[in-house]
Length: 99
Image (cartoon, rainbow, N blue to C red; front, side):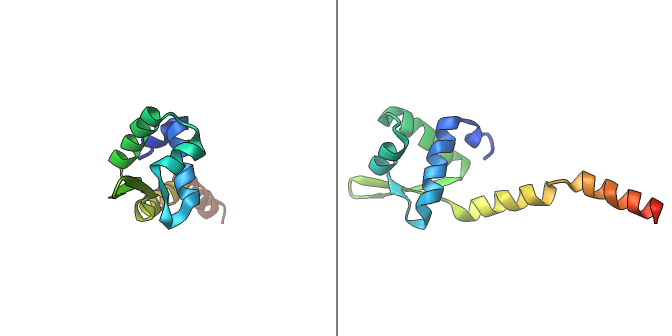
C-alpha cells in the first residue's frame, strides 16, 4: 500500500478520493480534479486498486472510484502502533534505571 502511494500523481488521486468521502468520484470527475490525462489516470488507478486502497464500481457507462476506508484504517493503525515503538521502550528503560 505504501508503495502505491509513493508516486505524486497516485497520491493526488488518492487524496482526491479521501476528500470525496464514501461517495467517491466517477472517473470523469476524478480526471477533472487531478488534471491527469485519461491513460495516465487509468494507470495510477489500477495501481491503487491493486494495492487495496481504492475500489471501483461500474454503473452503466460510469466507473465510480472510492477510497477503501477500512483498509486505510488498518494501514494507519499499523503505522500508529509501530510509531516510536523503539523510542518508547528506550524511554521506559531509562525511566526504570533513574527511578
